[in-house]
Amino acid sequence: MATEWKGKSRGSVLGYKIFVFSIKNLGIRSAYFILYFVAVYFCLFAKKSTKASYYYFRSRRNYSVVKSCLLVYRSYYKFGQTIIDKIAISSGLRNTFTYHFDGVEKLQDLLHQKKGGVLISAHIGNFEIAEYFLNELDESPAISLLTTDSEHKAIKEYLESVTSKSSINFIIIKNDLSHIFEINAALSRNELICITGDRYIEGAKFLTAPLLGKDAKFPAGPFLIGSRLKVPVVFVYVIKETTKHYHLFARTAEVSHRDEMGLLKKYTESVEDILDKYPLQWFNYFDFWNDIK
Image (cartoon, rainbow, N blue to C red; front, side, top):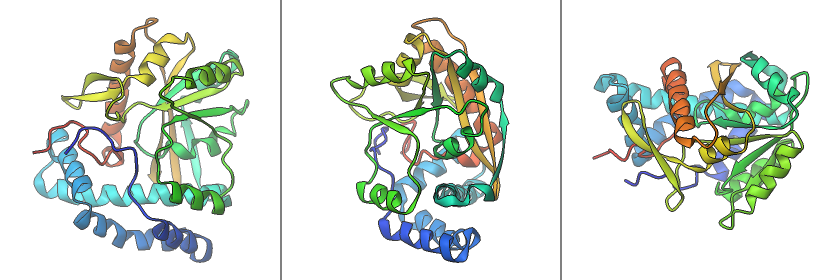
């Protein structure tokens, strides 16, 4: 199995239609109920992602065989819940959920500096719903999300047709590096540039650092950008804590200018800290460490 992420998440339009119908007509809990069977299906038939998830629990977290098998199922279920929550929140059910900030003053300070900032997140929890909570800050931020735009086109088009339009501006990563100009323009408007730092795609420049005791590849872009643009860098995570409650974390990263490896080290330490608290919400279902036999 290759170490890199392939650029697309698994799923079908039909599956999303079933969940959307359940949410809108029967309530969120009905969608959660269907998810019990979906999680079993993925355990049995999504062999590569199941093997990757088992490796994470067994080899990187050192859980027993039985516990690791159980947590693979629970991880799928938790991941499915975050997808359902995203659909529900973007469909007008924001007030069904509660949240609390941990480090909100760091984001407030960043916005008050009026020079933009870089937010680096990970595929832990559900950062995609952050905009619906960040809008409640004293100074509502404009967010630009740096993305490869590789997600399944049919699924994206369907979700856009049944949910409210996102206020996030998407900056597409291009081979000619023209996205750098868009990033600089967004920062000049005091916008927040959000990047995920944990999915390396084959062919792209990468950095290597240990995570949970073993070296892994990380995309170089987030750490080159964060260490070179002379703007504040904050690590952010949106974690599902209970059925309808989310916890938003913000942690300032302070490193020397042009020290991308120092920034990466801070990032991996931050990711490990979050995973120690919420081990189920590691949602990278591929051979992240290139170590699966």
